[in-house]
Every structure is written in structure tokens, then in C-alpha cells.
Amino acid sequence: MTDLREHDAMVCRSCGQEERASEGYPCKDCGTFICIMCVFKGVVRCERCAASVASAPGVSSTDTSSSRAVQIAPEMDWPEH
Image 1 (spheres, rainbow, N blue to C red):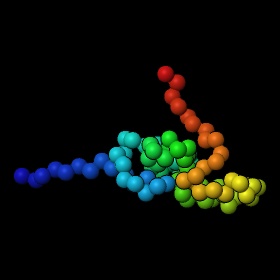
Image 2: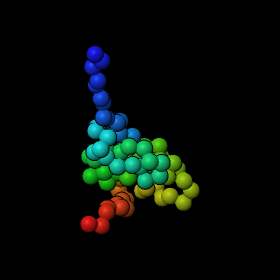
Image 3: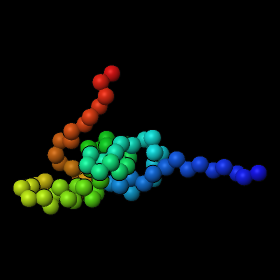
């Protein structure tokens, strides 16, 4: 009989850690997986989206930090319970 081994994990697109898929949120722009620990730290965009936002015209030099050290207050979309 075949041994079923499920692997319910995804790689965080911000820190690179592998976490359970149910313990994270999507990137604000592209929807890729961001782990819950990064979300708690204020990360709302993956590395790629954070880099594209930082290189966009009209962004000041203080906004060019990577997604690991976000200095801008994130906009969180929490459900109304």
C-alpha cells in the first residue's frame, strides 16, 4: 500500500522560512505567501514587490528599505468579528 505523506508547507517570500500554509497571509500586491512572523513584524509585501515599490518614481530615500525592515506603517486588512 502507498504511504501517503502530505506536506502542507510553503516558503515565505520575505524571509525564506518554510511554514505551514495556513499560518500566513498573501502579499499585498501579488498574493504570494508571507509567513505569520513576517506579518507580525509589519511585512505586507514580498521581496520582489517591496523592491519594485522602492524603485518606483516618487518614493523618498527613507522608503527604500527592504521588506524585512519595513518602516512604513502597514495597512492591515483584518476581518470584522
